[in-house]
Amino acid sequence: MAALKYAGMDDTDSDDELPPGWEERSTKDGWVYYANHDEMKTQWEHPKTGKKKRCAGDLPYGWEQETDEKGQIIYVDHINKRTTYFDPRQAFTVEDVIVKPKRYDGNTAALEILQGRDLSDKVILITGGNAGIGFETARSFALHGAHVILACRNLSRASKAVSSIQQEWDILCSQVSWN
Image (cartoon, rainbow, N blue to C red; front, top):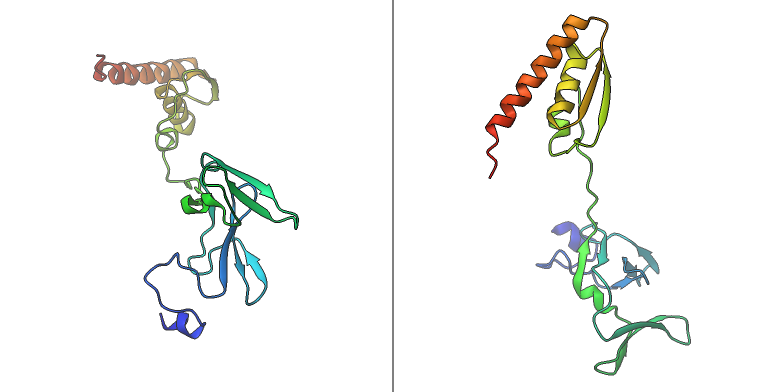
């Protein structure tokens, strides 16, 4: 933590504690930002953790957001008959987590990509579905409940592909116990 001391920030136990001269504020719609009074700048990320936060939910019961004569946002607590510039929702901020989609590559199986999806209301047309990638794609969609139509040039190989997928479907259904 020598870097923090060098930057003028004291070493604390809390990552969430703001350095001297900083203030946590929120926008009208609940996004948290940080004001650096020494440099007269604001930023969205926490100065220590680099994380973005937002206020969770609406104002508590009995609170109202208003604007004072200077145009600043004030919060009125009608129950305790007090006003403050501090957003009471800031006591319940949550980290703004961006969920990155899982990345797939050439080694990812179709069944892995479709895991957890219900395709029972979908109709899918697959060309070349009697072998190779087309067959695996048709198989994966069918095992996830989709109605699959195979467009193939060779009828006998297409029939074999369909019966193979149906057999696997029948085995899968026989293993499921219905309560």
